[in-house]
Image 1 (cartoon, rainbow, N blue to C red):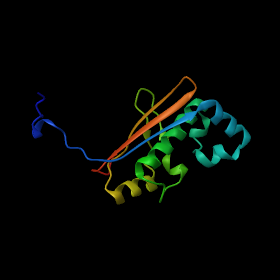
Image 2: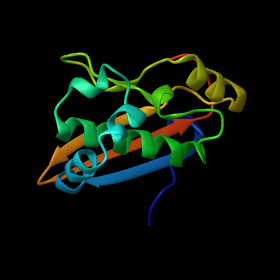
Image 3: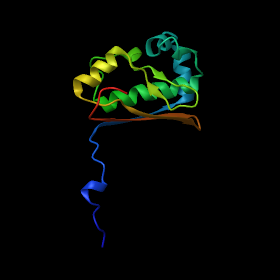
Image 4: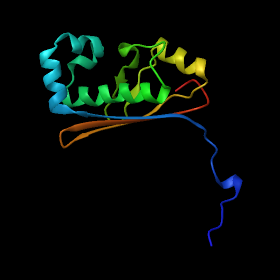
Length: 134
């Protein structure tokens, strides 16, 4: 028989949204080569300087965040910049537009996980209800 944990032992974070996206890196690279303006449209100037596998992961992160939010109303691609400080986990930049969308909806700062291996890049985003700051 399985005993249920007491209510004081279980954290009560309320998930507002979950998003995941996977990108085939080779296909993504070919798309960027076929349509050079796409790099400028999808990525901030700082993001454009990183290797394609990392760009694919950032694109997946932006798509995953849009899914977790339930849509892209009020934000565009440049509002979803992904920052990576050496030795720290990746995070979304606190752009005014993203801060506003999260605040309007009562969401905490998104949790983000990225990976690229075996020719694919994957991102996973969780958004909880709560504080607006990151």
